[in-house]
Length: 142
Image 1 (cartoon, one colour):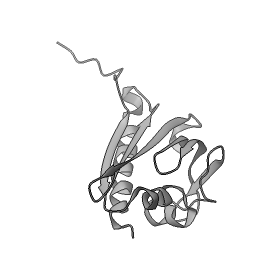
Image 2 (cartoon, one colour):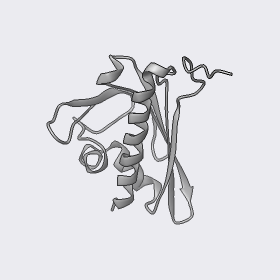
Image 3 (cartoon, one colour):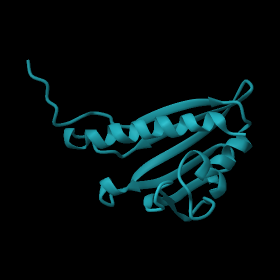
Image 4 (cartoon, one colour):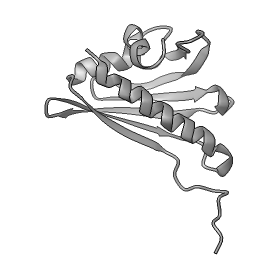
């Protein structure tokens, strides 16, 4: 028996974190430029529905990721189109869901539309590791 590694069935990244902050405070960390830089990347401006966004590298200020805020239901849900350099302009989708949890908020990220073949798997792994680290940074929010 051989394993066919040319096609994968699902490369969607799904992650959840439990945070001790209420949903409105978590929402601020997802949308306010001055707070995005604390856990993710500096933004050129606050994120708002229907607006393009650009997030830059903490190290050199170079363009890191960009897209458009497709939907924003304050304190509950946000959807971005999202790309990074290695995607060569291909857009993916990042969805954020905020749910009340005892003592705080459950924040769930779903990143879909990623490469679904063996050639793109290295990028999927890099994005998975990146999201893991960035979401961990949110545990320090105040």
